[in-house]
Length: 379
Image (cartoon, rainbow, N blue to C red; front, side, top):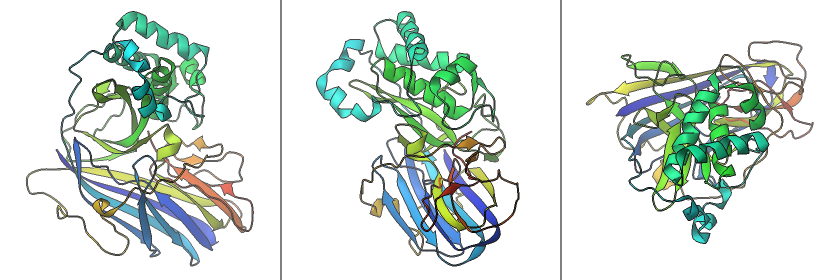
């Protein structure tokens, strides 16, 4: 299948923002089942875009606006072709997870982080899936997938970003980010390497993930997980809707958890109050109906992925963030920021945001950074 994606986020400020520095992760990856045809980033006010590949293999577009502005618009447009993903043909035993070379090659996806730090409840739930599935890695991963699907009800806005997986499991509700984090934590508790995936799903209902007759849908960024199968590779599953990841899923990148693949994060120096308006559109293409050429456009603010070298950069930790319900945007409840659409008195202050539709994380220069409304990753 072929899709054209348009990710657009607009920031508006009560008064002049003096400067803004940002990192965007919105470019679909290319792998065995997905091919990036075209990608372009535009920023208004105009800014030079520098691109690199981070430590997890995700393209990052970095840009700064250093002129006073009351509005900033970021648009990422891509054309991508997807193919069905194969399923494992073998059934490796659980003991194969202990092989030294396998553990060494997947060590980062066996470790806990703040989003996947599990406790006794998650361990016991995962152990029960082994009892059900037997001594088989693939069957165990599928059992975890089914369990998360049935244990959590998909409720947009039900949780905050950074909620612990034990609380997610106990609460029984969550968004796609929570489904993915719980599945990752359960797999890791069993010694199965697992990673968090950020992307998009072409559907009009995230809870079912079903197909649609529409050619264009408006969505939020989506999340699922991948588990490593010894001797085979990564098995991709979407526990939010109980489906195997397929042609209608578009992958942007993966990491240990959400913090590694936030769509947009950055910082601005300016007024105390701002608004954020994210929008993601996916259009299904057929035949020659391609909005752009199949070769990447090269020009200011656009760098083809094929020209990028891997420049590892260590991931930076995030502070406490809260999920806003409508667009799953993030903002800090204690940082003096207002939710998207909220307004207040204006005063110069360094603010940061982190989004699901666009990642932004900030570090203040003359003053201490505060978190503002952000477009967030994931429904």
